[in-house]
View 1 (cartoon, rainbow, N blue to C red):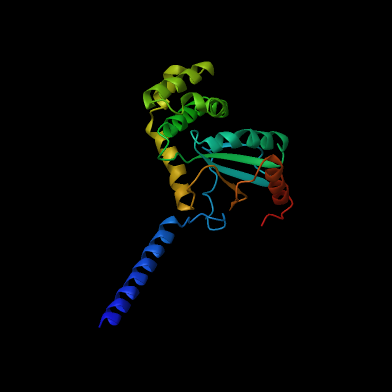
View 2 (spheres, rainbow, N blue to C red):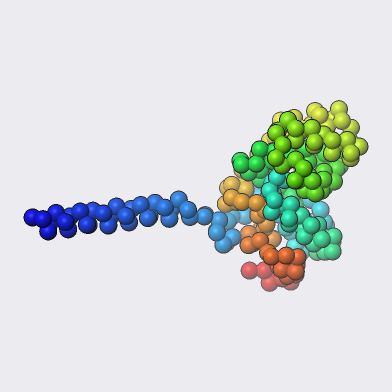
Amino acid sequence: MNIKRILFWAIFIIILVLIIWGLIVAMNKNPADGGSAKGTPMPIVATEHVRGPENAPVTIIEYADYQCPACAAYYPTVERLVSEASTTVRFVARHFPLAQHRNAVGAAQAAEAAGKQGKYWDMAGLLYDNQTAWEKLTVAQATDVFKGYAERLKLDMVAYDADVKSPDIKAKIEADRADGIKIGVNSTPSFFINGKSIINPAGYEAFKKLVDEAALGDSK
């Protein structure tokens, strides 16, 4: 009887351990690992922020969060790519503010409001270059900082103040984020080259190689 009882409890414990292990694996599984599991971004529309010729052989779409340190780290690399491959690359910026970054949405709203006056990319540069100056501020403090950037860009501040709170801008940001979620984006920055998700390259040369391969039609 004692042996049977020991065997019963031993089997019970083994099964329990296997169930717990399976739950842990399931909870930690990343649906976007490897990039290839992601879907295709929504088509580019006229209201988006795009740099580069429409007929460029390579289109890069970035889902980014202005408060994300990695996005700020990639910003100079992206700028260099767009500048040096001005006839090869079309770059599209999309929003993916992460929930843990309290000032990410406000920064995206500031960029969109500046975009209403043709200064989207200028505001984007200020936000990334000065990220450490506002990332830990309260929402109200960061809002004031963003307003200061708008003044530095000599924007019409009456229009900026109205636009930054507008439902249209909030809807644009949420639409970008919803599309990102739909195709499996769960971290920033997330890059797509010609509609295909890539693993973030380690530096400019690695990124340029992916662009060159895509331009030649060799992207896999």
